[in-house]
Amino acid sequence: MSSATAAPADLSTLDLGDHAHWTDGPPYELFAQMRREQPVHWSPNDRFPDEDGFWSVTRADLVHAATRDFTTFSSERRGIFLVDDVGVPLDVQRLQMISMDPPRHDRMKKLVGKAFTPGRIAEHEHVVRRIVQTVLDRFTDHDHVDLVTDIAQPVPARVIGSLLGTPESDDRRLVHWTNVATAFEDPAIRATWGDSLEEIMQVVAYIEAVRQERVEHLGDDLLSALITAEVDGDRLTEMEIATFFVLLLAAGNDSTRATYSATMLALMEDEEQRRLLVEDPSRIPAAVEEGLRCFPAFGMMGRAATRDVELGGAQIREGDRVLLWYIASNRDPALYPDRPDAFDLTREGLDRHQAFGAGGRHFCLGASLARMELRIWIEETLARWPDMRLDGDPTRIRSLFLNQYTHIPVALR
Image (cartoon, rainbow, N blue to C red; front, side, top):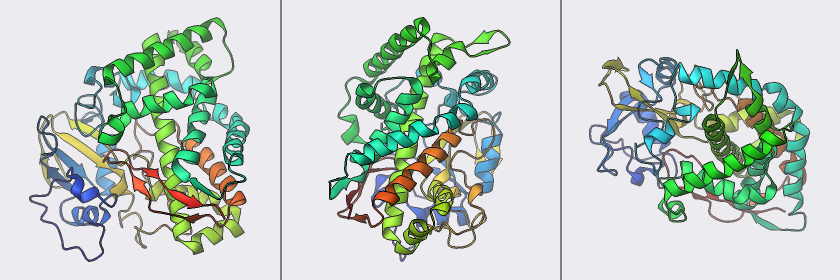
């Protein structure tokens, strides 16, 4: 579906969950047709015979409306994924703040917000820069690297680890546990798991050991702040701390890793855009926003209808799964009339994108951290290797939920 000359699809029989539509990455041309003709579209999801189908919402205004109407479109009822069975029981998924509805979500966000403040993130900027520099310095004498595995994976793992106060020696297994939580669609990654529920229990045991050690020796890290966070006498429980810990791992590792990799690839593919940044680094914040718009780390988030409702001309039934497609809404011509599929850091209205959600209760708590990390990362990369170029074929994860590359071979000079 990525070809500019592809014939229009028959939307009446289309199953968007069929990976045949995703072999070259997200099917942007197909999404454009859906926005025009059926902005709320039903797919049977035949790839998962034990699951029912799903609605796809692809227009920005409808994604915005559904996101803000949490009483009709629930995060908690069926979770945020494409299917119920992701290897982690739904009851366990519902312990995550991202899979909660108010009032549970509001209470959790208020408590977590006491610890995860913009001020704390801003104070961490020098640590983030040092982490980025340390990782990039490993390749000073290299001519070739894999942008994803060598550079994009270790940076966010250490940034999140430094915030939580976990040692660098644990980064690799924490990334592995992140994959268990989010990469359920890719058989190659899933083959590296053990029993998924057993792996989750290992995560819980690890976090509890770290939490207990921190209770006895409080520090200035985020985990200590979560332990001591209090609102009107209310505090986070041990399980709530553990589930937020896992959410930070998943969001922190998957998000910036994906957007950084795809943004750098776009800059390697467009010499004019790259030169703009090399010659004027003050444009890097704009490149961050355009990277978030074009390449959001999560292709969509799932909801479930709590009642029969009409949306965008479609009649949605109570219990139906509804997927809010950010990779489609971010390229909606209603938001970006001028070449919405192009990476262009000079365009206007960059802050209108929905990469962190479309407002409402579930707007991403880590947005400021992600922006700061990406800004520093792109700046330091271009300062070292302004002529980095692609040196082979990139490969992508097999997933509708995760919008990311697994390998991008590059020549540094």
